[in-house]
Length: 388
Image (tube, rainbow, N blue to C red; front, side):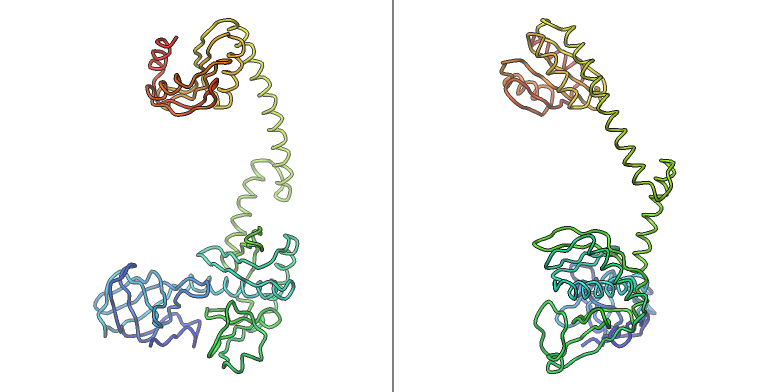
């Protein structure tokens, strides 16, 4: 059985060990050691990564760590012979970030349970974010208050208590757990914030978490899902938001604290401009349609129209030309969008034949169809010359 050094000393970064087994698996080579500081995935916390160093082979990269049949299995990029002496080195920056996030999640989950009585029913931690699912709903305002309380626990820099309790001892404790536990139970306590059964790695003092930042909240399976981040990752997130906000403030000539108002004003102006452009476009389409009054069947090519504008022009002309109107917009390289209509007509056979001939796709109602073709203008004109 592997000696788990991360429980004796969570800050152990380097160690010496001996390979006890190595076999090829789905994720490269699966290596077990007689002792390890690599934490295997569990309880929502990803497994450690790092390297094993040998005299003969040099660095062996460990990409992930899992537990199988009670053993800690290290996923390696090359094999090692059983009996080989190794020096292990975990990716400490990665591990410490996971510790910060996992510890922050405990504080938040404990405070949610204390305030609302909701359970943490789902927890996932990736390299840069966490999601936590709770069994009941609370609001964004509640989340802001919880964030403040959680960070107050961080600022107090309280010591974290981690110890094993016997099955009898643990019966006297009030603690969070997703399932009923038997035998020895490992309890992680953040005094005044949380008491929870957990097998993961944590900081020794709450101040090491650094910062708890809650990012989003939305309804999820009868409760809520909250996205949050802690420690270095929280600082990276805040810096990214600040950098983007600074760039926006420069582009809009607005103070950083006034960018939302500036964007709102810009959006309002843009909507008014779009409305006016739509009006002008409708006026131009009406003029084009009037010029084609009683023209019969019409084929038009227009540059730079959106699919919706193609539709609008085709409708405007078909209502007045007393025939079939086909509008195309695009180019020979990218293809053409089309809108084809005929009042009280039935275009289904025509559209099917056109799509087959001109490598198109689309459809609609019997009297009107929209879509696109991958053909050149000359090919389109030749097709409709035969039709018309």
